[in-house]
Length: 372
Ligand code: GTP
Image (cartoon, rainbow, N blue to C red; front, side):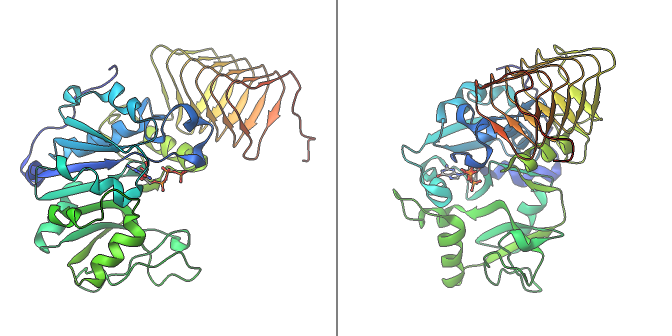
């Protein structure tokens, strides 16, 4: 494993974490991020210089949690190949593989035998968050909750299911997306369970924790609380969110112990080559061994490893997969370019186009009229 560092030191604040297991759900297929996720599972996509998951692992470690169980399914081997037993990160990581995907609830149930502590903090593996994990644990214990959910207040909750709470923080109900939500609190994808509850999730079949398990716990009268805050939060599920999350990490808007102290307008791997006059803006990331030609302008763009960008190229809000070549003076906006693709000189790609891995577009191959 390369590029890993040890993070965090134990403090009084994270003593709760020492008695907590972390479970990370990383088994999803990441279909909304295709074609990038055809080769690499979403939580392993490079984000601000490291696999996305590494930012979460660093935050888990900083909260004092050391035992981590990953619930894997899609491309399960990729996680263990990279992180191994976690020792390089100061963690102890175990992997549990679902032969067929069991959904979020089934994935949590499936790791039950590996749990060691009575408190279990479960994470969706594709959320970029900034909440103080120790505070979420503190809420859980101070309320003597059976389940505590991290709820984040967002400016526009209409795109999410929302979760109203009473004055004491107790969850009242789980609501589907609506045009007129009664609260701005949404499920942020971190749950603290009492371990015994996890055993009550049905084993061996797909279960959605959001649709099946949580409503049942409320119906059964269990103590379900929300830990509400306004911390940084982004679900990295779509190309647009992935680009924005990566850019927020680079610019220090999204906190991560992995890149603390190295934030700025761009993050360039030391093995990459950026030629004179190239402009890297808006939290752009340049991966290992990539070459950026003179006069290129990249804004809020994620460039994976081994990419060649020729002079005069302009790219914004896009993800450029590993080993891609982009010919001189091409223009790319709001696109995803799959690994190994070749985009010819002077091509113009925009508006959510996705180029599949290995596809070759000849010089002048895709153009839009100036007012299109
Ligand atoms: P899309 O296909 O683009 O919706 O992405 P996804 O498959 O990752 O689904 P979603 O974003 O809803 O998943 C939320 C989190 O749960 C992600 O971290 C997934 O990796 C994880 N997840 C989803 N389904 C499963 C599953 O069946 N098993 C496990 N272990 N994790 C899952």
